[in-house]
Length: 259
Image 1: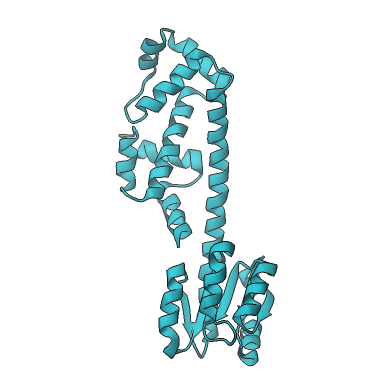
Image 2 (image 1 turned 60 degrees about the vertical axis):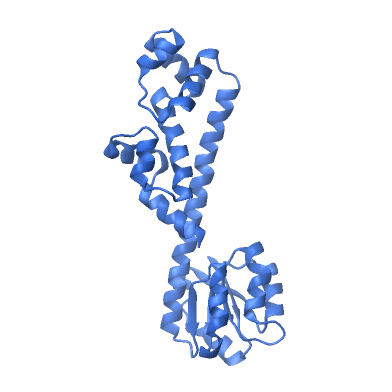
Protein backbone atom coordinates (compact mmCIF):
# COMPACT_ATOMS: atom_id res chain seq x y z
CA UNK A 1 0.00 0.00 0.00
CA UNK A 2 1.42 3.38 -1.05
CA UNK A 3 1.35 6.17 1.51
CA UNK A 4 -0.23 9.51 0.57
CA UNK A 5 0.11 12.88 2.30
CA UNK A 6 -2.41 15.66 1.53
CA UNK A 7 -1.31 19.25 2.22
CA UNK A 8 -3.91 21.98 1.71
CA UNK A 9 -4.64 25.00 3.90
CA UNK A 10 -8.39 25.12 3.17
CA UNK A 11 -9.99 22.43 5.34
CA UNK A 12 -13.04 21.90 3.12
CA UNK A 13 -10.88 21.38 0.02
CA UNK A 14 -8.46 19.12 1.94
CA UNK A 15 -11.23 16.91 3.28
CA UNK A 16 -12.90 16.87 -0.12
CA UNK A 17 -9.71 15.57 -1.70
CA UNK A 18 -9.38 12.86 0.92
CA UNK A 19 -13.02 11.72 0.74
CA UNK A 20 -13.50 11.84 -3.02
CA UNK A 21 -10.72 9.48 -4.19
CA UNK A 22 -11.07 5.65 -4.24
CA UNK A 23 -7.76 5.16 -2.44
CA UNK A 24 -7.98 1.40 -1.86
CA UNK A 25 -8.61 0.70 -5.54
CA UNK A 26 -5.40 2.61 -6.30
CA UNK A 27 -3.46 0.63 -3.68
CA UNK A 28 -3.04 3.85 -1.68
CA UNK A 29 -3.94 5.15 1.76
CA UNK A 30 -3.88 8.67 3.16
CA UNK A 31 -1.54 8.43 6.15
CA UNK A 32 -1.56 12.12 7.12
CA UNK A 33 -2.76 15.60 6.25
CA UNK A 34 -1.35 19.08 6.84
CA UNK A 35 -2.52 22.66 6.46
CA UNK A 36 0.74 24.43 5.59
CA UNK A 37 4.29 23.82 4.42
CA UNK A 38 5.83 23.61 7.88
CA UNK A 39 3.34 20.95 8.96
CA UNK A 40 3.96 19.28 5.63
CA UNK A 41 7.72 19.04 6.26
CA UNK A 42 7.14 17.40 9.64
CA UNK A 43 4.60 14.99 8.14
CA UNK A 44 7.01 14.06 5.34
CA UNK A 45 9.76 13.35 7.87
CA UNK A 46 7.43 11.34 10.09
CA UNK A 47 5.40 9.33 7.59
CA UNK A 48 7.79 9.10 4.58
CA UNK A 49 4.99 9.28 2.00
CA UNK A 50 5.26 7.84 -1.49
CA UNK A 51 2.96 10.54 -2.90
CA UNK A 52 2.40 14.13 -1.73
CA UNK A 53 -0.61 16.12 -2.92
CA UNK A 54 0.25 19.74 -2.26
CA UNK A 55 -1.27 23.16 -2.72
CA UNK A 56 1.19 25.85 -3.83
CA UNK A 57 -0.26 28.86 -2.04
CA UNK A 58 -0.30 28.19 1.73
CA UNK A 59 0.42 30.27 4.85
CA UNK A 60 3.61 30.09 6.97
CA UNK A 61 5.51 28.11 4.30
CA UNK A 62 4.23 27.68 0.75
CA UNK A 63 4.19 24.40 -1.13
CA UNK A 64 7.11 25.25 -3.39
CA UNK A 65 9.44 26.05 -0.49
CA UNK A 66 8.32 22.87 1.25
CA UNK A 67 9.23 20.86 -1.86
CA UNK A 68 12.65 22.56 -2.04
CA UNK A 69 13.34 21.57 1.57
CA UNK A 70 12.28 17.94 1.27
CA UNK A 71 12.32 16.55 -2.27
CA UNK A 72 16.01 15.64 -2.50
CA UNK A 73 16.11 13.94 0.90
CA UNK A 74 12.81 12.06 0.81
CA UNK A 75 12.28 11.36 -2.91
CA UNK A 76 8.49 11.25 -3.03
CA UNK A 77 6.28 11.79 -6.07
CA UNK A 78 4.07 14.88 -6.00
CA UNK A 79 0.92 16.37 -7.45
CA UNK A 80 0.77 20.17 -7.42
CA UNK A 81 -2.59 21.91 -6.97
CA UNK A 82 -2.72 25.58 -7.88
CA UNK A 83 -4.78 28.47 -9.18
CA UNK A 84 -4.16 30.08 -12.58
CA UNK A 85 -2.30 33.03 -11.02
CA UNK A 86 0.30 30.67 -9.47
CA UNK A 87 1.27 28.81 -12.63
CA UNK A 88 4.81 30.26 -12.58
CA UNK A 89 5.34 28.55 -9.22
CA UNK A 90 4.13 25.28 -10.64
CA UNK A 91 6.61 25.56 -13.51
CA UNK A 92 9.40 26.00 -10.97
CA UNK A 93 8.22 22.90 -9.10
CA UNK A 94 8.57 20.96 -12.34
CA UNK A 95 12.33 21.54 -12.11
CA UNK A 96 12.23 18.97 -9.31
CA UNK A 97 10.74 16.36 -11.63
CA UNK A 98 7.13 17.09 -10.67
CA UNK A 99 4.99 16.76 -13.78
CA UNK A 100 1.52 16.39 -12.31
CA UNK A 101 -0.14 19.80 -12.08
CA UNK A 102 -3.86 20.32 -11.45
CA UNK A 103 -5.73 23.62 -11.49
CA UNK A 104 -8.36 24.66 -8.96
CA UNK A 105 -11.19 23.89 -8.69
CA UNK A 106 -9.91 20.33 -8.60
CA UNK A 107 -11.51 17.87 -11.00
CA UNK A 108 -11.51 14.65 -8.96
CA UNK A 109 -11.41 12.48 -12.07
CA UNK A 110 -8.33 14.36 -13.26
CA UNK A 111 -6.74 13.90 -9.83
CA UNK A 112 -7.50 10.17 -9.90
CA UNK A 113 -5.88 9.84 -13.33
CA UNK A 114 -2.79 11.67 -12.07
CA UNK A 115 -2.62 9.30 -9.11
CA UNK A 116 -2.87 6.28 -11.41
CA UNK A 117 0.09 7.58 -13.40
CA UNK A 118 2.17 8.10 -10.27
CA UNK A 119 1.25 4.69 -8.84
CA UNK A 120 2.43 3.05 -12.08
CA UNK A 121 5.59 5.15 -12.07
CA UNK A 122 6.40 4.12 -8.48
CA UNK A 123 5.78 0.45 -9.30
CA UNK A 124 8.15 0.60 -12.26
CA UNK A 125 10.82 2.33 -10.20
CA UNK A 126 10.57 -0.44 -7.61
CA UNK A 127 10.86 -3.06 -10.33
CA UNK A 128 13.94 -1.29 -11.68
CA UNK A 129 15.55 -1.06 -8.22
CA UNK A 130 14.90 -4.75 -7.58
CA UNK A 131 16.37 -5.59 -10.97
CA UNK A 132 19.50 -3.49 -10.35
CA UNK A 133 19.98 -5.03 -6.90
CA UNK A 134 19.63 -8.57 -8.21
CA UNK A 135 21.84 -7.93 -11.21
CA UNK A 136 24.49 -6.15 -9.13
CA UNK A 137 24.56 -9.13 -6.80
CA UNK A 138 25.31 -11.40 -9.74
CA UNK A 139 28.11 -9.14 -10.89
CA UNK A 140 29.60 -8.88 -7.41
CA UNK A 141 29.65 -12.65 -7.15
CA UNK A 142 31.46 -12.87 -10.47
CA UNK A 143 33.97 -10.24 -9.42
CA UNK A 144 34.65 -12.05 -6.17
CA UNK A 145 35.23 -15.32 -7.98
CA UNK A 146 37.44 -13.74 -10.61
CA UNK A 147 39.57 -11.98 -8.00
CA UNK A 148 39.64 -14.71 -5.38
CA UNK A 149 40.02 -18.46 -5.46
CA UNK A 150 40.46 -18.94 -9.18
CA UNK A 151 43.24 -20.59 -11.13
CA UNK A 152 45.51 -18.64 -13.44
CA UNK A 153 43.71 -20.22 -16.40
CA UNK A 154 40.29 -18.95 -15.36
CA UNK A 155 41.72 -15.54 -14.46
CA UNK A 156 43.30 -15.44 -17.93
CA UNK A 157 39.96 -16.27 -19.54
CA UNK A 158 38.18 -13.52 -17.60
CA UNK A 159 40.96 -11.08 -18.43
CA UNK A 160 40.57 -11.98 -22.11
CA UNK A 161 36.84 -11.24 -21.90
CA UNK A 162 37.48 -7.84 -20.29
CA UNK A 163 39.85 -6.90 -23.12
CA UNK A 164 37.97 -8.37 -26.09
CA UNK A 165 34.27 -8.33 -25.11
CA UNK A 166 33.54 -5.95 -28.02
CA UNK A 167 34.84 -8.50 -30.53
CA UNK A 168 33.63 -11.92 -31.57
CA UNK A 169 35.04 -14.40 -29.05
CA UNK A 170 35.20 -18.14 -29.71
CA UNK A 171 36.77 -20.87 -27.62
CA UNK A 172 39.60 -21.45 -30.12
CA UNK A 173 40.84 -17.94 -29.24
CA UNK A 174 41.19 -18.99 -25.62
CA UNK A 175 42.75 -22.33 -26.52
CA UNK A 176 45.51 -20.40 -28.25
CA UNK A 177 45.95 -17.95 -25.36
CA UNK A 178 45.83 -20.48 -22.51
CA UNK A 179 47.50 -23.40 -24.32
CA UNK A 180 44.88 -25.87 -23.07
CA UNK A 181 42.16 -27.86 -24.79
CA UNK A 182 38.67 -26.45 -25.19
CA UNK A 183 37.27 -29.26 -23.02
CA UNK A 184 39.70 -28.50 -20.20
CA UNK A 185 38.94 -24.79 -20.36
CA UNK A 186 35.19 -25.36 -20.30
CA UNK A 187 35.46 -27.67 -17.30
CA UNK A 188 37.76 -25.38 -15.31
CA UNK A 189 35.63 -22.30 -15.92
CA UNK A 190 32.36 -23.99 -14.97
CA UNK A 191 33.85 -25.57 -11.86
CA UNK A 192 35.43 -22.39 -10.53
CA UNK A 193 32.77 -19.77 -11.42
CA UNK A 194 29.55 -21.77 -11.57
CA UNK A 195 28.92 -20.41 -15.08
CA UNK A 196 29.69 -21.72 -18.50
CA UNK A 197 32.10 -19.50 -20.38
CA UNK A 198 29.35 -18.37 -22.74
CA UNK A 199 27.05 -17.48 -19.83
CA UNK A 200 29.80 -15.40 -18.27
CA UNK A 201 30.59 -13.65 -21.54
CA UNK A 202 26.96 -12.68 -22.06
CA UNK A 203 26.58 -11.57 -18.44
CA UNK A 204 29.71 -9.43 -18.69
CA UNK A 205 28.52 -7.82 -21.92
CA UNK A 206 24.99 -7.19 -20.68
CA UNK A 207 26.36 -5.53 -17.53
CA UNK A 208 28.28 -3.05 -19.68
CA UNK A 209 25.36 -2.59 -22.07
CA UNK A 210 23.06 -1.61 -19.20
CA UNK A 211 25.62 0.99 -18.14
CA UNK A 212 25.50 2.40 -21.68
CA UNK A 213 21.68 2.36 -21.75
CA UNK A 214 21.72 4.40 -18.53
CA UNK A 215 24.01 6.97 -20.19
CA UNK A 216 21.41 7.27 -22.99
CA UNK A 217 23.92 8.43 -25.60
CA UNK A 218 23.39 5.81 -28.35
CA UNK A 219 20.54 3.70 -29.76
CA UNK A 220 20.29 0.24 -28.21
CA UNK A 221 21.26 -1.56 -31.43
CA UNK A 222 24.46 0.47 -31.72
CA UNK A 223 25.31 -0.26 -28.10
CA UNK A 224 24.77 -3.98 -28.65
CA UNK A 225 26.92 -4.01 -31.78
CA UNK A 226 29.76 -2.18 -30.02
CA UNK A 227 29.69 -4.85 -27.29
CA UNK A 228 30.13 -7.84 -29.53
CA UNK A 229 26.60 -8.61 -30.74
CA UNK A 230 26.19 -8.60 -34.52
CA UNK A 231 22.98 -10.66 -34.47
CA UNK A 232 20.31 -8.43 -32.91
CA UNK A 233 17.75 -11.24 -32.53
CA UNK A 234 20.28 -13.25 -30.53
CA UNK A 235 21.18 -10.18 -28.46
CA UNK A 236 17.55 -9.52 -27.52
CA UNK A 237 17.07 -13.16 -26.54
CA UNK A 238 20.21 -13.12 -24.38
CA UNK A 239 19.30 -9.80 -22.74
CA UNK A 240 15.76 -10.92 -21.89
CA UNK A 241 17.00 -14.24 -20.52
CA UNK A 242 19.55 -12.58 -18.22
CA UNK A 243 17.52 -9.60 -17.01
CA UNK A 244 13.91 -10.70 -17.43
CA UNK A 245 13.26 -7.57 -19.50
CA UNK A 246 13.80 -6.43 -23.05
CA UNK A 247 16.34 -3.61 -23.59
CA UNK A 248 13.53 -1.20 -24.49
CA UNK A 249 11.68 -2.05 -21.26
CA UNK A 250 14.83 -1.37 -19.24
CA UNK A 251 15.32 1.92 -21.08
CA UNK A 252 11.74 2.96 -20.37
CA UNK A 253 12.10 2.17 -16.66
CA UNK A 254 15.42 4.03 -16.54
CA UNK A 255 13.79 7.05 -18.21
CA UNK A 256 11.06 7.00 -15.56
CA UNK A 257 13.72 6.75 -12.86
CA UNK A 258 15.26 9.99 -14.12
CA UNK A 259 11.99 11.94 -13.78
